[in-house]
Length: 259
Image (tube, rainbow, N blue to C red; front, side):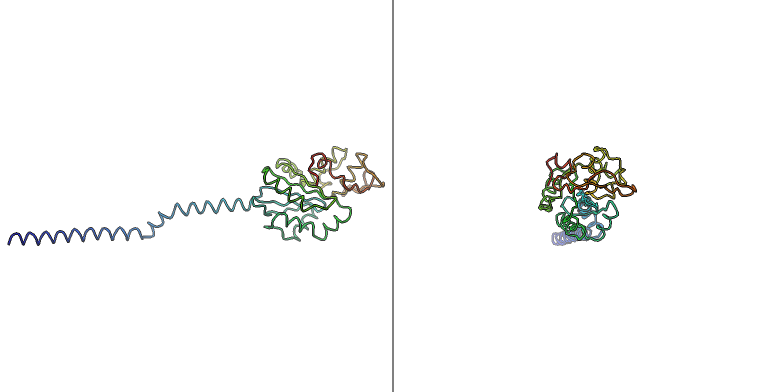
């Protein structure tokens, strides 16, 4: 009798222990399913995802190189690491008008350049006596080399279009004077030739006008004579109105970057 009673009580205790273990297990599973627990587990993953999105967004929207297109209009294309245009800036009135008339943002840089050159205004200038310079500016040598190669392909066949590369430091100097990079380089060459124009006057001149003035001051004009108009000066300056096609900017000729 005593043994049967003892055995019965042992069975009851075993069942109680099993129930308690089962209860703790169920409670633990429920705890894991609570929002707070899930949030703690997901927090590191969400933080990593946010970082990836932030870095990716910065890389996409931040220009890593600049393409300066100057003929008059003058404008610059900010190109990201993926060779997409993420910024379009007109550096004079004509440049701003051209920029607003074209939808260039988020295009491949070469497609954007083709659209610029195919616009009615630019194509008319190029088919006439206009001079265009296209500068690739940046400190990433690999990207700038790739962009310069693409730019040369886009301008191939244009005898009066010249392509070259430059550094970010030079671009900052140009912008400090309120000039696009192409106009800045032309301004430096004009000053070295003896020109007395200010950056403000050069900004609204065409590259053809600047080129003719440089050639006149350097004694390189091949044909014709006359006065070169200087916007804002109220008078002509220098001699010669020759086309000078094929000569190109001195820096492009000397650097070997001429298209």
